[in-house]
Image 1: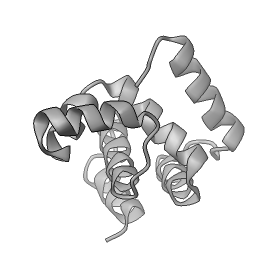
Image 2: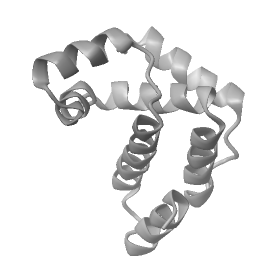
Image 3: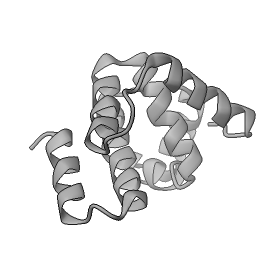
Length: 118
């Protein structure tokens, strides 16, 4: 089942809970980006892997912050076309305006200006 199919099913199951939908959408896209090996701050990943022994702990704690998770997903979308397609699908499924690269860059800039860092 594709990410888009999962998101469609999520909205069919509960079309009123957009907060849960976005949390799940970002989580699914984040998992895909992690599986692809996309990273923007290798130092922290290496540090956590050495300390924790597994990437699972890195993902669990490093991405505990929702803003950091969102920054990772939106930056990944700028870096990788497939991730951008998943993010666009998430917007489309939610009946939001078409997502553009300019909008993604704006979200990234806003998160960074707000103090979100890796």
